[in-house]
Picture (cartoon, rainbow, N blue to C red):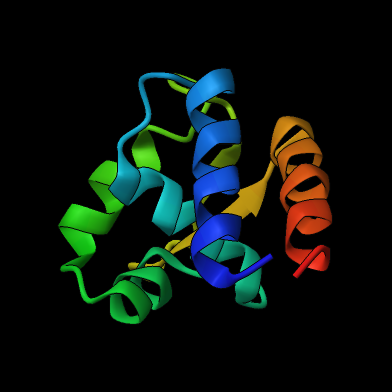
Length: 101
């Protein structure tokens, strides 16, 4: 399976499970999976967004939205991104798809 097909499968999984998520929110989630203890700023830089824009998309992934991540304000202007139980389940699902590559 090529990269295009993998991304189509991953997107399909997200759209079936969380139909209201934007492509940008899905990308932010996938980037968060690839970074070690990411901050909103780390994700913003990785995807080429401003921090406020990345925060907006990540907010769709919190408990008030999809429930895949939580945001922890560190008190020094940074927000750490943590996977929730649902986020870890999605990690397992998408990891399986990426392993098929």
